[in-house]
Length: 111
Image (cartoon, rainbow, N blue to C red; front, side):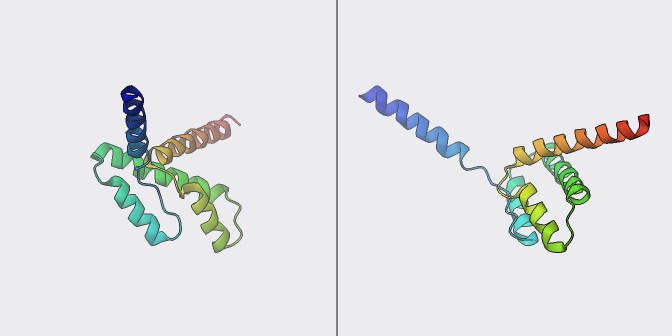
């Protein structure tokens, strides 16, 4: 029984630690900025730079590929792109956006 309790305790501890990562709040510009500031706490400068570059890449992709016809539609697209994501998820999305942009540029250059 003690072994079972120990295993359950370790599992719960792991869940509580992994569930505490700050997430982006896309409900408003102010909330987004505050959530990014919170994410950056404890990050080294290299990781902060990675996050900021990823935000720029995802923002550019969202802006140019959204097809939004109004400011409200564009806000909804930005919320969809960032809301509820962790720094690592945003960085991964940024890397994907950069790769897609590079592929598009390479494709245009070959024509």
